[in-house]
Image (cartoon, rainbow, N blue to C red; front, side, top):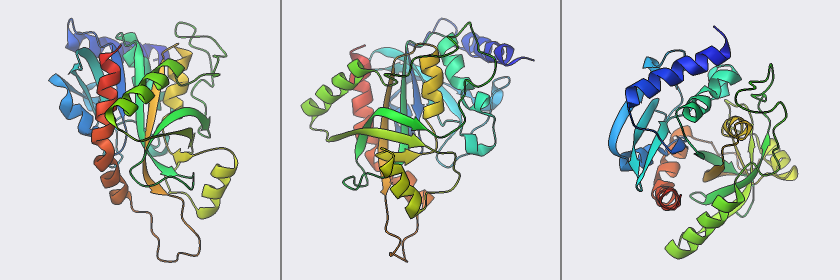
Length: 274
């Protein structure tokens, strides 16, 4: 079966289960950020393992479900857990859910992640609007172009929608939410960064680092979907002289969860205005 056929098979399955429901917004929830899914009204849960050709999420804090329902007056489809390249899936499978969501009708993509702060002014619990990214994961558009979805060489001048960013900043000012705005760099993982790598990422212009998101955004822009992205800073760059420092995956998920309420409010207010 070709990749295009796999996309359509999975999309047909999801569309059939949704009946007349057609989501306007797709939401990707990162590590520890699944709390937003609890805000979705009249939820319909579709497990990834039941969708033909679909990968299954194995990462900590990722439940592996589509949640479809109403949020802020709009029908949304949320990925309660994403797929990562480090899980051993090919990059086409990592981005398959984004293709599927586009086929069932989404008009916007919201992405979130837990990230390490390379910017030395960042603190654990900060929210960072992603204004741009650096992709160090294999590009998901390598191989034959899927002409039905987009052009061979999509423009990435504005990968994150300036209008959505401006609206998010206005909402944050109104609600008293402190926001950072910076560049996110994605590497493959599945290990946390060395102190030297933190310094390298800072030197090349990154404010935060993680192991996801950029592949999804590249595919979304290939399909001309407007994207809004946010990182929750769950740990920060550390000094090599601190011999007792350990990066703890469980602590990162907890830090993300503590910031999830602010992110949820921001997403809901943005969606309300679409």
